[in-house]
Image 1 (cartoon, one colour):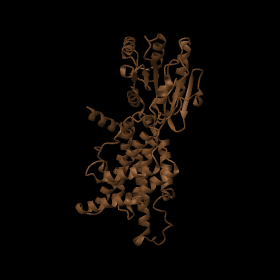
Image 2: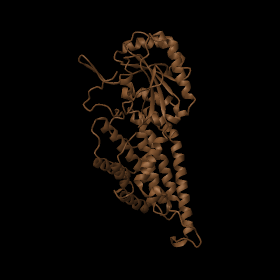
Image 3: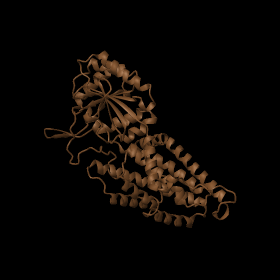
Length: 457
């Protein structure tokens, strides 16, 4: 059952990543077309033919500086993630801010970042996180229900008149799991807003399941139009009562449900922004690796008398840039230079690849078939190694112990070489190898390193 769910998630990630694959194929075709035109115009010996115009280089000027190419591609991929918008409603004290800061990789629910949209709604966003939250200051029983509903509907309707990435895509309606019954006020607001946007009902501060069961029963009786047919029970941070400690719960379920409900065009934005389920980041990243591996094989098989490393470089750097965008990894200029140096061969990866070439040459007749096989193997292993590095970086960051630059490079190189030694695995496009040895749940970056719960409203 777990394997089927894993395969289903990966297939969904591949579907979501098809746009990246198509863009990669177009980029490769363009580069190869210009390279082939350049070779043909040079004639034999690589010299310009008589009467030919001054030749354009094999690649663009941007390609001459791999670090700049990586940074450029990463920025481009970040911009192409899309942008998700989530409306969050709940009464004061229900724990919305705590929930938000537990789900996302940066603490979005900070008072100083909120901007008023209406008298009831504030917009919270961070330039490095492709999700905007429309949070309520607190919906109180004393407020006019009709005015509140009108305010919310106007905001949703206005968003629909803008570009798709400006739409409000989803509503989290938060209720304290400790309350004894569902207020008529809540029921009417949920019914009204479900006409315009999918509603996820979230029980916050869930400690006593018996009380949550009673509240759930009243939800069922009200037959509310909520996604999944039931509430998601959450506890955003650890809580100690007497001698008993209650651990966080429900966050993974909330993230997975939200990801399923969001439009395909903005899922990768949410996957980038959330800091709970690293599986989603891994699956999306592996879809990118699948596309890059196919592109690398096609590029290496093309009859172009150029260095395989030069032909593969833009594909591999674009792949790593895409993975960085999905994970939300932010690298310094020095880290980028170190990463790129390892990829283009000076750091040792080309030497490792040459060993594989020699081994394959012993068993397979030469020519571009071998080159294509090697290119796919090298690119697949490179992508998987970077996925594992990114996972480890998130884990260390969440623990408050960022990974030193020297260790990053060593981890990357060791993982890459290990993957290439395997007879089957990510190096040849398989997904059988395991990912990071740690838990697939990576806490958000603002989690404390000493294990103490974070404070929130």
